[in-house]
Length: 245
Image (cartoon, rainbow, N blue to C red; front, side, top):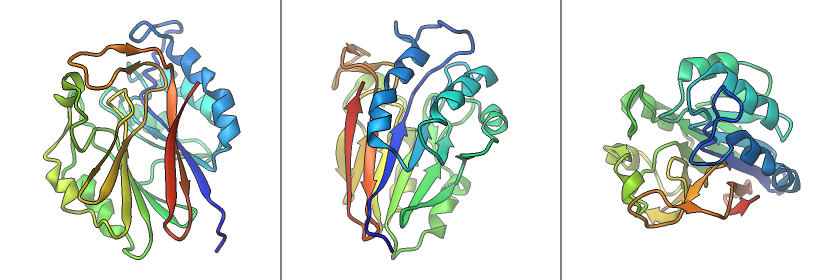
């Protein structure tokens, strides 16, 4: 098995609408996503994960716009929905070469699990027994990275912590820190790095608009669009960080 690191990037909370020029929190979603082009090309990812809220309006056109841009950045592109997405529409539009919905992907000697926490017309997330079922497939002797849209622990910002992953103990009861190295999520529009039960908890910044940390309401951070990157080695070593445009 190669000892070369597998490079994965996480893009989250793009909030693209069907109508070109539609703003999100005063920013242009597609323009800001495109600003990440030089960063992505420098990282040269072996795979990409879209971790939810790809769309703001759940439209087919919004998914087509994002897919047309990111498919040139690296493949495969794994995806899961957020609370603003419409999964049936995503499934139809992203049923194309290079895009995969998992729920378990095997990348570079790692098990990468995509858990769907989004429910129609609910801003908070939840994982029931059916949606947690992919975790039962994991090989305890192989490293694993979990992706979910909603935050599995509080991040300290009341405006978004009121829409968390509810009943989060259902998730934590099924995770074995021996193989699961990190839970990565979106939704919070800020960079968060924490830990729970010996497992790292990492958020990806939004590709369109982010907030300052620990604020009672969304407060635009001028750092611009961002992404999270992961380097995954087959022996279980890993590294992660954040880049902004």
